[in-house]
Length: 413
Image (tube, rainbow, N blue to C red; front, top):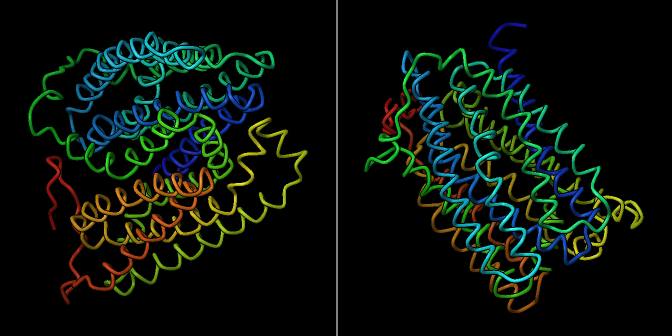
């Protein structure tokens, strides 16, 4: 296998390892906790997911755009900034934890204590990607997967959410140490700076906006259900989406590796034909996976999610429909990203906010099931709007090479 092929395989396996870690953390937490305990854990994990996404957008996506001799300095700077920013965010989370009563407050306090460990460990993946050594990220993330599964598996049944969060976070230490050791040869002798991340106009600010209106808004809306409605709603929604974790690996891989592959297609017609086939395949897989989960015996479902299974299983039709149309929507956005990268932001803004409104409105009318169906309707609307934009998109007849972002975030032919 060529070096390029090995790097691609390592990147896909690393994404799978990272996704498997998130899935198994939630599965093990659900099995160890009561329904209310998992609800509190889920609220904390949603908060972590938002912070993880913000760090990926502000730091990670800018790192992977860098090239040349500056890579070592950029990687060192990214690690230092992530450590400093996550320490500051950890202090805020600790303050929230002290203000909140009961198990939820303790869990947020624990998240504040371990946040720098987990965010820095995850951020190393983007350094290794930019350095074109994804096998090093795979090694560290595989160790992370093994350690977190082993650590949570040793916890007693009924463990508190705070204890589970603390164990989950501390189990990142071996992978963090390995990742820093593997990164050391590339950053030895170079100086890291924090100032570029604090300047106005930093490219990460643009990526944060896209994340905020895309994924972050729906995550915060789910978290809001736990604050203003009931934490049990968060537990049920997180339990249902956890079961669809394998599809997230496919969606993330399509976003990460789709543009170079699709960009080789001939003209708009070739690109659309290829992405439409990909979208149809992902939609069929989503519907099929939902059917498999819906037919799962209750005994096996409880083995996966414990007490949370009863609430989560009732949401499977809605969540399955959401993931089926998400496959179509992912490929619509992929098509636009290849043909006209500037066409995606407005779609993300309008239809992500619509999804949040439908989630909250659905909950107000029909409870947790209404919230799940609201997310499904919002995803369907985004997919429909995306393909409608593709159909209206005018591409020059000479079919120039797809635009690609330069290091400053501009698009060039």
